[in-house]
Image 1 (cartoon, helix red, strand yellow):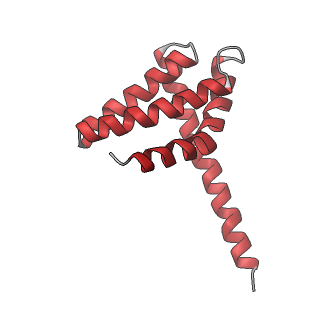
Image 2 (cartoon, rainbow, N blue to C red; image 1 turned 90 degrees about the vertical axis):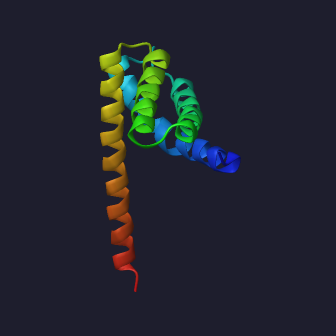
Length: 115
């Protein structure tokens, strides 16, 4: 495991993933259950657990274990059930992809305007 790589993943996750996870969790689990610090902890622990699982297991087994770990973290920190945690994870991924696509389109538009 690359320690510096994990630190970079954690910082990037806190900046990029945590706000999306927090907003989706807040809308689906409620204001009192989904706090921003909870989303940060989910990202930090999820990244660390993912690195450990990825180092110990490989392939599809690793992916399934990481998915279960992320959903369990969402369930624990946002104080919701398994299905709601799965729904929060799915919606967060969809929202993240939409935001990334919009940012990419804006970036492409800006590049097209440059002489």
